[in-house]
Image 1 (cartoon, rainbow, N blue to C red):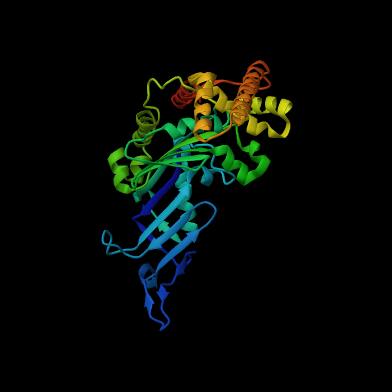
Image 2: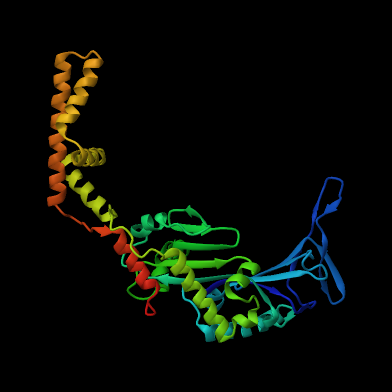
Length: 368
């Protein structure tokens, strides 16, 4: 359920056993130092720097100087992926409630071993990402056109090919091809990371990026509230309400068909078998023919071309040759269209509505 979580520690002490690395401020050619402040107090000693870092495979921590909202102390934040903390190999599988509660008990102990004594439950939430993995019937590319049509309220859409990001300054909804991410990280061994029998993974994430947004959406921003059953259930309800109210809000999507990858593959293979190396040019010609054949007649095209040639001063023989070539090309593309319908090498027809309803059903199915 929860992926990335960013918290602000409110109750902590840093001992001399800490493993922070502190970054100095910037300086000019005269040696004047800028952007430095007291970022931490360690055993009574002020640490003057620009900021401090403690990063490892499980979590990242940053210490910032005091701000207007917290003028008396430093701002120390911890960010991590809960699934990756639980399983260092990947962040694919979500944690249930009991695993989430147990994780924070272990985290508090691990922070102590890194020189940070804290009551983790007094922390406040600064960011929280929730997700669900869907295992659709087809690869991501079949659903990409569908995602490009989505309009989410008050969010700008960015299309990165295998990722669709709908965002504003406070929140994001991200839909992406998880299989591509795993392939980039593990190569062909990614198959070991996914449940048996599932070759495709689409992840739907809801990201609340600021404390104020978290408060507005959940009614709280304290970690200790999140780790109660009511708080966790509230977070889960918020995720599904967002998916229902923004991504899957359409009840009756138009049943318009679109060309799938397998249909294109079928047509190109047919044209290659009869047209050799120019099969793609023939494919483009054929699609033009099919569109014209549906909306006009050959006679109208001949009359238009004849008028253009006459106004251009073409000779009668040149006009007749042009019309002969037009008729020949028209008949060739007509024959190609018939062949592509009769010779089905690999064809699957889908409707946008069926793809949308498939994902919608799997999103709200408890078994998926």
